[in-house]
Image 1 (cartoon, one colour):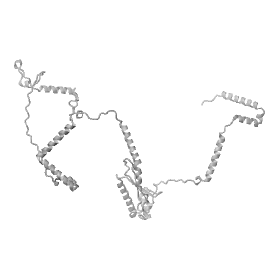
Image 2: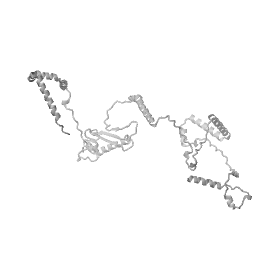
Image 3: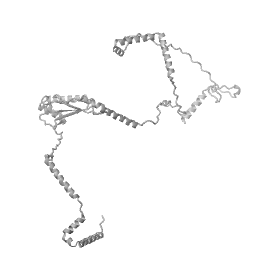
Image 4: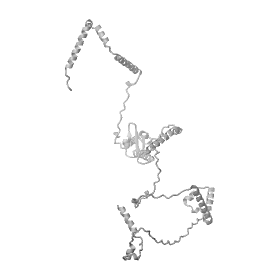
Length: 398
């Protein structure tokens, strides 16, 4: 509503500022003040009449003329141009100088320059006729009455994006395709490039006496990892004796190293990842070991301080008993035990036949062999009586 009121008030103000239409004095019943006649306007459907505006005064325009180019000279070159000019051969310099002198002479001659410009215009017209290029102005988008005063410069023209035709795969499918391409790339490397690495193999050589430090690096293939710049160094304390340290100085060196010493393997291990480059970390470790050796030689010996090994937790290594080792006698004993177990299993599997057992009992037992039917009837009656008693006894509730 506020925008509508503002638009209507602006239109009314513009109409009131237009020139007053003259009316014949014969039709005037009341003379109005001059100021009122100039500032008021009677609304009418008749067209308005405007006086033509005066033409603008002509302004003096200075004749534009391109300045001449100074004569060609190597002294006018910049430092970069001089360095490139010095890299040329003598033949290239001669061709370069002749071409630049020709261009300068042509530019400073107005007649030749006009001919060249005319030739350029003819070529441009010919290209324009052949290519049939059309330069159309982008029409402003009609944003409607309610958005007249909105300064939205991004909504005046179309974005120009490609029309989506719903015939493309999704972003997730593109990611799967990229993963498939990467796998195929590594497969090609494994098939064609990695076999060529055998040409670069070198025979193994034992480290020399002066190579007592062993550095270890960690690399992550195909990615950048924050642990890549970490460097680990290992050395044996016995390699320092007797070339670098004495036995007493070696003990002092171990005391200075502290918990970095492993008494089981006699290995001293230190690492560094302070710096962002491997070379800096390696240099720092080398300087640290050098300073420790110097301190063990020249510093205090700490002879009254015992070597502290509380940081090391020894592991229990169990030895395999000799009685458990497989010998020929042990093999024969195991085979005999296995055969006995198989025979026992076979005897246990045989099914007991009840009829055969009863006939065997009748033949062998004298009480059953004299009256077998009587004994069978008595046993049957005893079974029925026991079953009847069992039904009469009420089972206790749980």
